[in-house]
Amino acid sequence: MTTADPLHTLLTQPRCSLGVFVPAGLHPVTAERRHLDQLAQAGAELFEVGLATEDAFLDGPVIQAAYHRALRSGNVLDAAVRAVGHAAGLRQTVVMTYWEPVLRHGPEHLARLFADAGAAGVMVVDLPADQTGRWHDAAAEAGLRTPRLIPRTTPTPDLPTAVAGASGWLYAPASTGTTGYRGPLDIPALADFTQRLRAASPLPVVAGVGISTPALATRVAPLVDAVVIGTPVVRALTTDPGQAPSLTAAFAQALRTSHLAEIRA
Image (cartoon, rainbow, N blue to C red; front, side, top):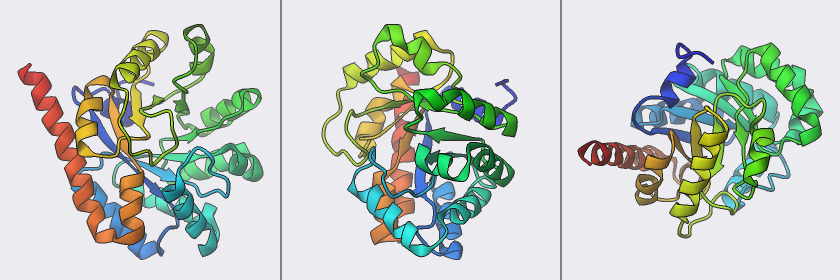
């Protein structure tokens, strides 16, 4: 990717950016678009739009429940394409999905659908090793980036293989648990992992999973190029959507505070 690429530009600015994960199809179209507008205004600089699937085994109960609610509402692929189309008009947008729906709909077909909707990329969180070549070829043909989730347990000698073919960014989970983890984070371990990723690849590093509070976002921000929040916003969107923008604004403010602290240091 070149420096003229908007996603690359966003992730290589001096400060840590804020990404917000939103599962597609959680609300009717008009409400969903309004929520995306409000989240963008509140400080979301990057959207991750989740394509609902039945077995989201890397996700915790909040996001799983949101996916199941979306599945009950109808055609989740159409819902995801609509959500991406709107989100991409507001901010850089990447689709988050599992391999099962990619395989079911066809990698080439799915890549073209999301590219035509305006997505900058698609991240398959459980991409099988034996399907990596096919998926990367399909995404490249459609002009999509292919961010990769790299487990922290990946041994250093295996990192070059793990990151091969990735584009857009590398995703470093802040917690080794599922999404929605609300406990303490091992910041030194995350720092060590991000350093190993940067030694293995020039791609930006993005962290999510377990960054449950603005205070934790402040601690993670100096280590990465973007912080993504998911479960806190999804919980709000599910129970009280009016709270989602103020929650997003609090995380955005935390990242600004972290950047100012770095400058002063």
